[in-house]
Length: 589
Image 1 (cartoon, rainbow, N blue to C red):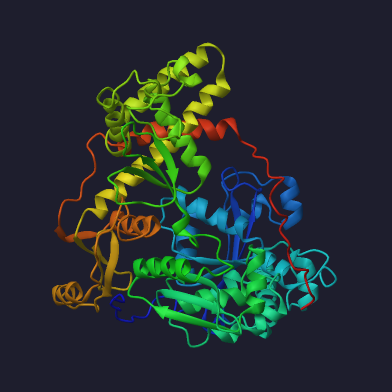
Image 2 (cartoon, one colour):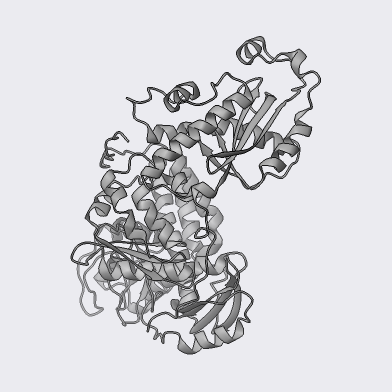
């Protein structure tokens, strides 16, 4: 049964103004030096523009309450005598922030100017407005070629765009010149299809002309949460993704920076883009996972083959053992997983063997038949049931201990690992000790995840709600860990009728095998993350949602410390096996 759809509501992104409607405040500062933490502002100059017209200007000298270095005075022409009677930054900054409120800040080398303003606001305990910012130097590097501009200094760009004001290291003059540069750059970008503030933020000159010509594929897509599917000329899915604003995200593929080389190739092949509108972000994330697993698009790298996950199995036989398997069976065995690689699964199995001396041979044993013992028996690491000296009843406590490690309390495994690591470290066998630690981490991380998943999968039904970004409630029905229904209530509407209707119409889910009986582990991870977000409320619960009191989740502190130690010991990974990233050549605009 398909998930219940929600109600379309406009998002802030979809209501974003066009560049011609955006109010820009182009600002320039003169300072006593380069660090906002040790230097002071001596002059503020700004120009407010919208749609190419100047709406106002702001200019004032600022008393830095410190001496201006001689070389700064020579560079700017601002002397100690000029700023002696000027107001301090504590008077200037509140006025400037109020004057610029609601606009987009623009500066040439914006991190410098915005950094000074922000640092001074923090020093004065002033609330910093949520300004967007645009750096004309960075934008020019993306728009202009080396032949046009050997560098992106303000003086160079002023000559290229023939600004009405010549920059001269005075705040207002430089701000006026920067405003003219901004208008020149925006005119260039308009010819490339960059018409909104969102497109301006993400524009890069690395996008090819062929990509830009396909930006019409984003037209008509929903402006809300959902899943988008790029298809080739035969309708086959090439790439599947999700977004809180589908139309805005798809548009970025044609005008935005994309570090993944294969995406440029994908966009070149794509002929159409389909979209599935979703009630809220959780539904979009789950639908994306399901569609990727179903269609396996060649340009998606993650989540394509959930069926290839590996499991660590404690077999059901007279003398149980551990085995790495791909499929779950209804045979009463205990399973731990899923693991993303055979290497991790094998490491986790080795960690169990360090704590519990289970047999490690792969042949099937019987109390009625005997065979020669292996070397592990001679080392005391196996009770050697193969030679007939151990009965199934004698061996059974080992299987019980392994089962408890995998599904309940893993602390005995951690204790055994610590003792062995201490012994090896005392013998200065540090690499072996590190290997023990890494194997324990592989086991405990997977056990903690499985216990979280199994707790959610044990619930026949769970209903939760969270306040939506644009008002209303995002509601989800989860059955045995699978998202069975999703809906978004309209702003101001009572949620209970929608919850009742959703529960009635949600997908019927039958439990299956293992810790993930009705959904993939990735889908259940998505649901758990959504449930853990602040503000999520549990509306209804059928069953018991709990984890073991002494489960692997309680060892998170040790796991973090162990992983930090591992990463510190290997700060530089060998990256020679990685493929080089190809970037398209820059073209003249």
